Image 1 (cartoon, rainbow, N blue to C red):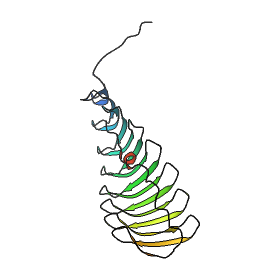
Image 2: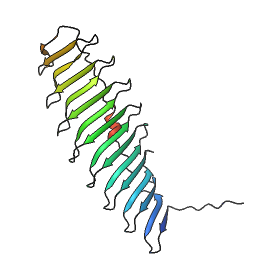
Image 3: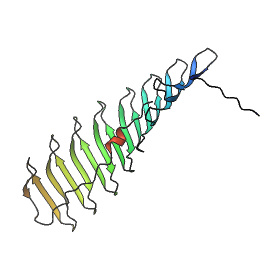
Image 4: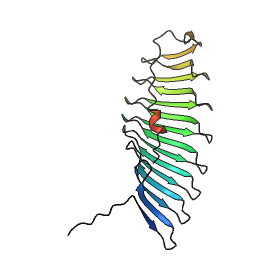
Length: 210
């Protein structure tokens, strides 16, 4: 049987009332998309590719607010974002290109306040951020497994460090604005200076819009 090929720039499915309920087409940059509409014409779901080739799925509510997005960037990083009824993103989960996962929770004003991540080597880090998006406290494990708590000022500078050295010795250290220790509760081996990487913030923040 000979195959029939239909070529067009767009296809639309309509209901009995003539309302467009689904559209398959190309955007202004010739990127393909598929959108699903409710009876009032609002887009409730849209899947597509952007000009770079990144893929994205967006799901909206009956008020037209985007409530969830799922994206895959061209570098291999992926993300899932969940929004509230006002369309503000409140939670993000992502994987960096190398596979490091990150979970971020946001205040209703859009600022990230909590980040949990696992570095590529497996070290976890929990970060608490202020209203300006600055990390003020970080709790994590160094590469060898030693726990470390870091307290930072509003400029993001380390001021207090507390943890266990590799041999299990407890350490408490105060640091001045120049990063120099001013007081330490232990003369034992210092807590490792290298803290686990916080995964990839880009991966969380990436929401592919098509």
